[in-house]
Structure formats: structure tokens, C-alpha cells
Amino acid sequence: MLNKMSKDELELLSYTKIAELYLKENKKTMNTAELFKEICNLLQLSEVEYQEKIADFFQSLTTSKEFILLNDGKWDLKSNHSVKVDINDIYEEAEEETEEDSEVREDEYEEEENYDTSLEDDYSDDDLSDLTILDDSEMEEE
Image 1 (tube, rainbow, N blue to C red):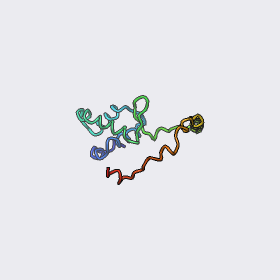
Image 2 (tube, rainbow, N blue to C red; image 1 turned 60 degrees about the vertical axis):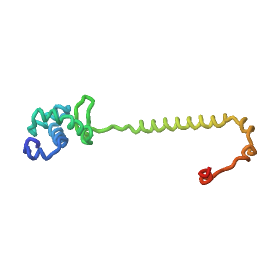
Image 3 (cartoon, one colour; image 1 turned 90 degrees about the vertical axis):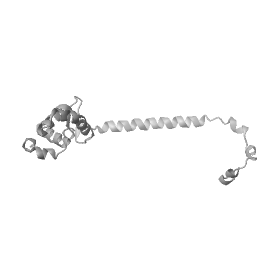
Image 4 (cartoon, rainbow, N blue to C red; image 1 turned 135 degrees about the vertical axis):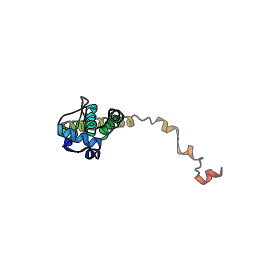
């Protein structure tokens, strides 16, 4: 499909769109340099343009939701990969969090039980009877 498109048609597409079509057609993974080299060949870009634009191309790949960077440093389409979610792992994590939460609550409760009440006897409401509460307007007058 890409080989059948004219240079003018290809120039209307973004580099990431061309990369997406290229990976779909060829059904293989490629590193950034190889993939961009193929795009440059299709668009007949010079080596200087390749050097000037490869960083922007890499940035586009990393921010695009269409691509995934594999462990071997090669790019592929996300649509070619699925994520395996083990429901049992999710339930086990939730149970562990619940157990930890209850342990924290028990620790908090123990702290409350160990509260030292001996200091309460040293103060009474009478100690506060000579204090005056001021509102904001009274504070500004001073």
C-alpha cells in the first residue's frame, strides 16, 4: 500500500502514520533508526534531514498511543499486543491492603488506650477563666 502511494500522498501523512502503516504492512518490529530510515526512503529525504528529524520522530513514537516500545528496543503497534490481567492477583492485592489497613487501625487504637491522663488533673477550667477571646475587629484596634 505505501509503495503504491505517490510521494505527494505520503507527504500529507505524519511520520507516525507512515510508521503505523509500514509496521502493519511488514508485520515486523523495528528500532527507531531502521523505521525512520524506511520513512525517509519513502519520502526521499536526505541523510541531513534524517539526522535533523530523527529525534522528533522518536518523540512522536513515545507520545503516540499507537506504538509500544518492546524490551528489545524495537517498536511495534500496541494493537499487536495484549495485556494479561490475572484476576486472582488483583483479589490477593486487595486482601493484603485490607489486612494492612486493619493492622494500622489496631495500632491507632492501642495508642489511644495508652494515652496518659495524669496531665489532665493538673489543669482545670478555672485556669482559663481570666482569658479573653477577641474577634478580628478587636485585634486590629491594638
